[in-house]
Length: 304
Length: 304
Image (cartoon, rainbow over all chains, first blue to last red; front, side, top):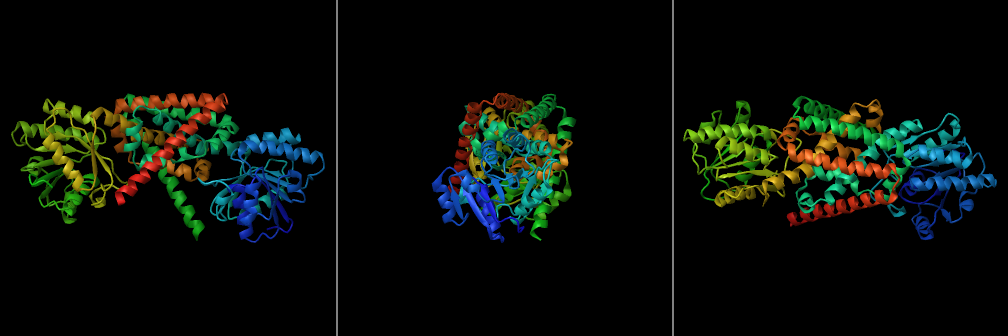
């Protein structure tokens, strides 16, 4: 860890923030980690578990003297926290030099919220998104190795201070993550395609089947392929509701693109157009097989 | 095994037919198993591996003296084989009393093919569908325990001989499967919902992403949820092409039903209608969680 970081404030202590705190402590960070949140019992538990050193229910108190502030709230709450931090900046409680980062799954809406709150993108604001999670949530589920072999995407803008980017990057690397930089807009499009759209499709399919008259038989005769395909429909509805709103535009674009693709394939199936059906399935299989190989290679590389 | 079954003919020796042969031999069937197919090398390999006792490239020879004929070809080939069997019936080579069953993933199209071939549904024809498979294929991949804890759906019609149903049922039970009966039409609807539609959605999504300009980044940043969701897009394109044609009507109906569901959810997302979004995601999560519990209970029950 860089010598400049002596105190880190983690705003909201759940799985994501808690795992980051645990990970950097386990990997040699000797500074202080202070948590802020709304539920005292949860923050107390974080201290008992040794995840953080202390906590405060007062935001000004929790960020006092911090070198880095990590906003680890759910996506839609991030904007509120930015507003509160902007007020503390105006009140001269929060200095310009303090690095602020976040973990939200959508970056464009957080950037817009920052501009609204601060009147500009603060130079030391480095937006980030750890591509990691778990079906579990809460500080009790925090794990020191949650980020190992996972990617963290940082989305600095042209005016972002490179030194601040470097500090946030080292923080995540200390937690075991591979850090990459990406444009905000590109991040939201890529995540809409690989994560947000699949969740919407899984929710839509399971909701459709759950409300069908054949529901009993459907679930009774579903096999392993169905289990894997629908696993993400067990994800937290509130989190995915928030993402649907926060990444609204990119997600709608992806839904439309998918609907067009499905409609084309439907026509091929209706017309029993073997050539088109085979071409689509074969392209998909080939891409999916390549993707599987890529994942296998990654996990081999990272275990070496 | 019932004493009445002394010889079984398996038409096409791949994973499905080979595993059935291995399974019943491993569980006490002492009669003879004869394989028929187009590729002598594959049939020879089946004999070498002890999967079957002997083989013939001639269908009349392969079914001579058989008590049960299992058509274990890919779905679209099943109709051809029924045609050939009907010709052997006309030529008095194949008696009425011989029980015929199949393993195709779609039952309505096979039933129609049987009526076309025989002029009626033969009383000793018992259509069936083992809900089991593997990413591997071929007789080399055959496993004696492929059907253990798996369901086999039989779809007899009103005129089907109950004694024939009982024989086919015992055959699959000997292989370790749980056998259930279902209406042909209902089978095709349920499978369209739980298996055929999810495959189409996975193929459509991966094909869409594979042809996108962001393809590189999309696969690079895809995480575990995407891996599980798209696993079935690695399935055999030919097999799924065949199923798309064989279960055409039910599949189109399911695609339309899904498109309607997706369109409703899209509107809710576009209108930022939090209540509708949350209601849909919550219903889906609840159904998926129940399904997961059901599967867990099944696997516990079957291991007791």
